[in-house]
Image (cartoon, rainbow, N blue to C red; front, side):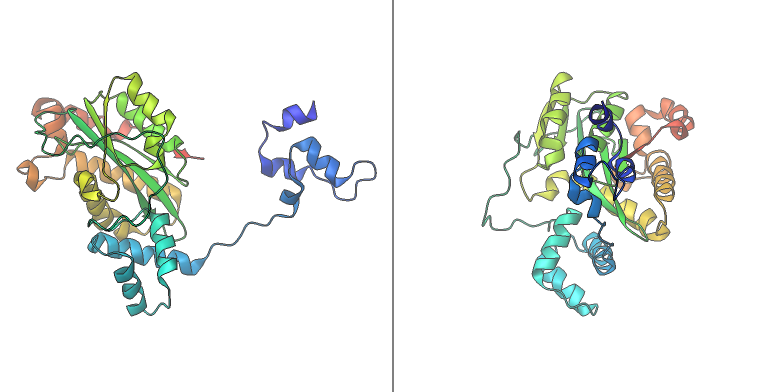
Length: 303
């Protein structure tokens, strides 16, 4: 009975039940009853690497300025800032941040094979109406101590941010939450993403297929295939994230929520002839009403 019930209780709480030196039940038996590996009793979380956090902040800022910088240029940039780093560390940190230089490079080795792969359908396609094509991507959001991941779903015609979610991990759940949130607004004809594992897994693909949405995917290493979302990240970071330097997750939530409301409802876009995304997405008559309701959206942090 204990073994069955313990599976529904958090590991951290079960560890508190362990009693070292119990007269009748050995530590091995206690771990077995609680569904814990004995090694977990001795495990101590590794402290955050402050140097890596500083390097990631610099890489994120420099990438936003010069997205065409590859590993070698990024390494030289860090060296010029006074950090002694090798290219292997830069590769590891850029991969953790999801940063890829915006130029075609040689394919020296193949990456992991996604569960599903679809062709890129937006090249040369005339986008003439809202919900004709949506696009999604994930970016890194730095905080004063630590970082978060942000996913957003954008309508290509209007640049309207249909949905977004924050998470402290790259688990697919926060991407599914954003997708479900967006589908309460409308259903696109085409949904475009990169070939990241979050977007090529069975759960995500099956959700799109259930709505009979045509699936499109960027070519590997071709960030320009998703250029509008890349521009959104640049605007968000320069106009919000870098100015605020969030101390807590709650501050990040409030700041990003306020920015996306501003971005959708008030910020004029030159490419849209100085109209707002909301004006194009909903039409001039309904945009004002949608603006009034913007503050009522709910956003949750994935565990």
